[in-house]
Length: 203
Image 1: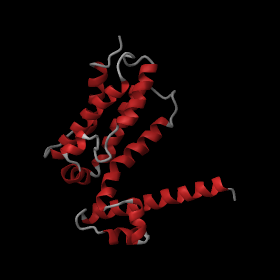
Image 2 (image 1 turned 120 degrees about the vertical axis):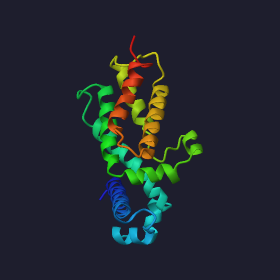
Image 3 (image 1 turned 180 degrees about the vertical axis):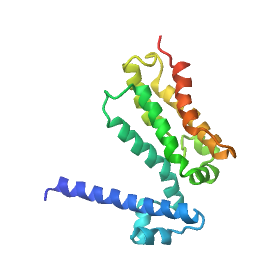
């Protein structure tokens, strides 16, 4: 077996262990609550040694914060994997927002917990949104939109992505804090419309 092949298999095994730990933790968080779940229980549920847990997540909080990173990464990869011919770049960005909202709905208590105890105002100012920032994928899609003539090419795509990220995080926080039904998908896709039809309009 060649070294690149062995290395690829090792990396795949690492990814699979990380996912197994994450899925075990998420299942326990959902059924018995975050505070009541211990690292020992997570590792038993995942079928790994306790030391293995800390190879992938430094703390239990890190598993919780991985929720946002994983969802955005998974949905973004799926969306970009559809090819450039499947709809407009702005359409893709809106579908990402809608799918993200749908997926987060089932874990609203956990997402709320992340923003309530895991993400502080200084974190947000430093660009740490607990794994929920979509600025990298938004910047890429906005660049595609500019190339396609959907968005004003004279504007800074990273600046537009940062503005969209701020609107998106604001909606997440409001959704977490709301005691009434909150149309998260509608608000998130509306943020794209607000940005594109406002400062991002093509000339």
